Amino acid sequence: MVTGGRYRLASVTGAAVLTVVAVSVANSAPVQTFVTSAVPLVDRLQPTVLSGGQLTIAATMTVVVVMIALTPLYKPQPRRVLNAVYHTHRRVTMAGLALATIGYFDWTYRLPRATLLVTVATLFAVLPVWFVSIRRRPADEARRAVIVGNDPDEIDRILDAIDAPVLGYVSPPTPFVGEAEGGAEQFLADGVGRVIENGRPSRDLPCLGGLSRLESIIVENDVDTAVFAFSEPDREEFFGVLATCHEHGVDAKIHREHADSVLVADDPGEELVDVDVEPWDWQERLVKRAFDIAFAGVGLIAASPLMLAIAVAIKLDSEGPVLYSQERTAEFGKTFSVYKFRSMVTNAEAETGPTISEEDNGDVDPRVTRVGRVIRRTHLDEIPQLWSVLKGDMSVVGPRPERPELDTDIERGDGVTDWQQRWFVKPGLTGLAQINDVTGHEPQEKLRYDVEYIRRQSFHFDVAIVIRQVWQVIEDAAALVTDREER
Image (cartoon, rainbow, N blue to C red):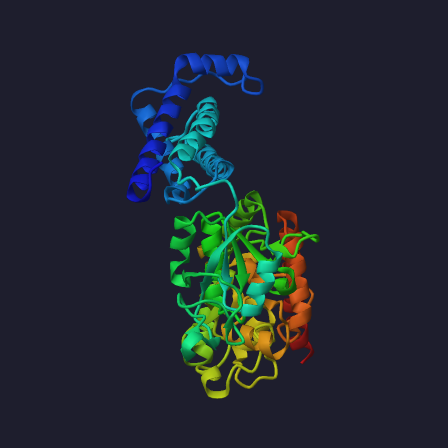
């Protein structure tokens, strides 16, 4: 076992060397002959042995692709054997698919099919052994948990329900204050004190540190389970903890009574339920991302003449920039800048406030320009968001992103306590709520559609939603033309 910088060096060097060895073995004449003559489904291929420059180029490309795919494994983490094997196999599969794609589109850097199959099979066998041998081994095979949060009542509830040893708690800054022995004040704060309830320690549970040390605590103490005990979590804190748990392969759990704010696995018999950080299989995420890239890329190219015409019309209609940007909530509660064609007078929200939702057509709002009414009615103002899809901030289909302040207003003012469930996936250009004409003015109904989409998501479901949305855009455009003719 090696740790720190030595682990990174060993993991990178070992993976590169093993990849070169795998390509060399797969490219040898005896292996090629055996595979193409004795292995079912591959016996129709011709044996192909590369040499010289061809072999150098193909081997280099293979090493580069595999090394990029294995990037998350280069960080020292306390993985158990099965966990290390699973993550390595997952990354090797991604590398194999990438190499197959490169071979399909570019024959200059391709591995012959038989060589590719043998190379991936060899890496499937040898890379897990390598990463298991150098991993940070947990001190024992028993589960080790920490509680992350600052709610004393919730911590007590978790301690009563959990069956794994709890090492301590990790706490963000908190308003809870009590009095320790001798009259001194004692805080449940960022790395200070013990759990306080009604001025007394509720349990003799040590504080391991603040959220800033969570990653170090997980690695140093071989933690494999983190249970949430937040009172009113800050968005960045909450999803930052989730991201840290996901990165280190740590199970994130929450008490069933507080599970309405997250997506959870269906486990009706347990008080502590798993937070479903990745509600879709990685294959589905890969297909979804490929669809997003293809749709956004083709859409931007095909719509470029229309975008130019809209830009010219906006400049001729009113003073101000062509594009308009806003901060919106992204996956895991982060924020990103979304761009739209400007449909209102310049500084409209600064002067009168954001009184209308992004889905409103703005026909009766005096701040909306003449061109703005047209592009809102036909949804053409949304075209620049294809760039956000291409960048990866958004997806073609998903919950529509809202402004962070509007998210907060909905959670607090409208009592929609499970609104955060929408943040577990990328926001979308369109979604199930949009094709059913449900806007942010109906947050509970909108949430119902968004969560239904998350649970039912698939490539075919996305395509069906996109087709219906395109049809609605056509209907809106036709209605606009009809209305103008009647006038």
